[in-house]
Length: 216
Image 1: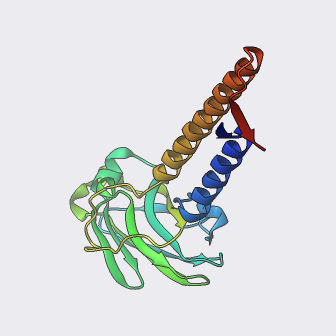
Image 2: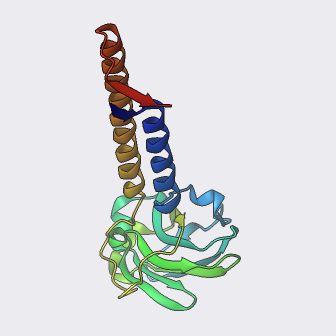
């Protein structure tokens, strides 16, 4: 007499396997930076009457308010002002007094800054210089700049060259979505197997097949 495992045990085994995968294979979790850090950027850089040859600076402190290490990056966003003005504007960005970027405002992209321990604080300073040779067309300018911080929980890869502003975007958790797709496919496959097994079992009973006994 041929023995066959009952379909319910097959289903339980598959579900336990999926739970084990979820426990043992972590995936990247991307979060809104506002939930991970403390940053008062409401008045980061709002300047009036800025003329060629002048310099201005501003500083904020980024604080990790979670109980885990975070990986973070920063970028700048112009909220108001002339595009031609930003094309001429020279920028220096310092983190803990280390120069992380130097160049034109329009050249700056996301700058990966690495990891920040739980409760850690990092001062970020921005120095702006408006070249004197820009001309009188830019007299008495007003502009508003915001500091954007992208953060996610977990330790990121080491930074080989912190001054290299290549513009590459940080990992945003695509591997997590890939894992979800895989698990979804496995669940569909498990359901198909259970349905097919149950279907043939019922069909066998109707046809009077008595040489198979399910272990239950």
